Image 1 (cartoon, rainbow, N blue to C red):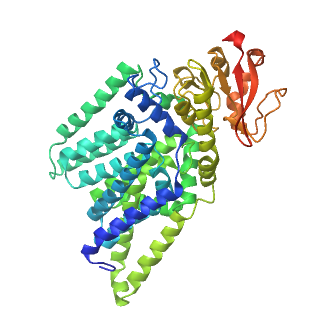
Image 2 (image 1 turned 180 degrees about the vertical axis):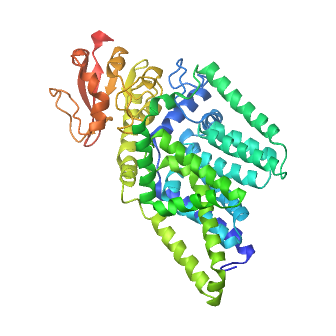
Image 3 (image 1 turned 180 degrees about the horizontal axis):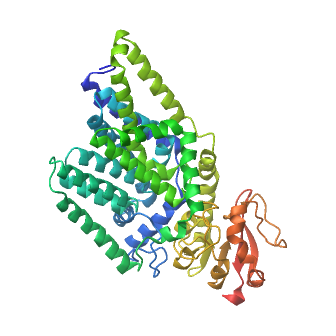
Length: 514
């Protein structure tokens, strides 16, 4: 072995890495606005209203059945939903780190090389950012890597159970089910595992039950979010490729990103080929979905544990191949490993510089999320029961206001989600579908346009439009609300002071039209 440590030290190093990941997550301290969408569903379920965003309206505007039900159970027994979501996310991220080490031990030789996999994960800024964001992302990453680890270790029924849990956590869990199902067929034909059919029947039954429940309860085959965010056109695929390329530019680099996967797809043990197939499946899904509109590469996170193990397996192979030469100079192996770890640590610990993801994360954490939270709280304190809001984004405002909310992007609105829009895939991912006139006809009491406009002074009510549009994507989404004079005849502009130097600007439905 070129570079090794006593086996007894491995648990302590792994514990240190887990601690480092927690501190890394605390450093980012990010909460996504989409978190509050799930929290509102969970809150309504815990209160007895069902899996609904607005009571009485069954639309699947969340993406994780398991995460939502779990949070609803915790809310029902009295836990604060946001704190519970963030805590469980960090715990799931830590477990993912441990599972990554376990998987790496099965795919490499030596504890030191295997420890590099969780080290790469703990150092990854995107993984740390989403660990405490309150969404299902860390839980899904944990289930993905655990499913692959138990499958490779030969735990037949545990593999099926974890694959089902992954499927219930994210729609992309279907990829885990298919890839691991094919692996069970391969192992059965090689004579090293049980027959594959019981695994498929048990896991497939869960898939059928999930689809049956969705059809019965929501009346849809897929979550409403799928229809709201996807167009399945070439422009969307190009945007997905750009999204994946941006991650490579900000992190490992294109060559380092592709090398472990390509090598083990072409040549490698069955376990490593399985991991490479899993990573490729997730990357293809990212391309098909057209990337994500949230910061810090959320869609890449579930594949990162598998990619970290592949990277360590590649390094292990390179070091063993060069063993004869390196052994001639005893310290060379140590130096090489240290240099590689330092280089990889730098590209993971340093904030993404080439693209907008880090800047978007900082702006959302420091400005937008606190601002949207205050807006929701203000409406919760000042709006009357039975009033409603049309808004983008809907998360924090809906959760803290408690009012009926019309989603102008269609995540929780079936009509907008299924609307055919021109040039889909060329704009901001997940923010392209809209129908302003449809929203106006529903007569929401308040219109929060311009991505919730908060300024340092009250806007001039004589301006048309009252709220200025500096962002082309936001204007493209909302410009049809100003077709004709409907909005000007029925709504009046208003500005209210939230805090010192902060004014919320919005439209309010006139009394005579309510």
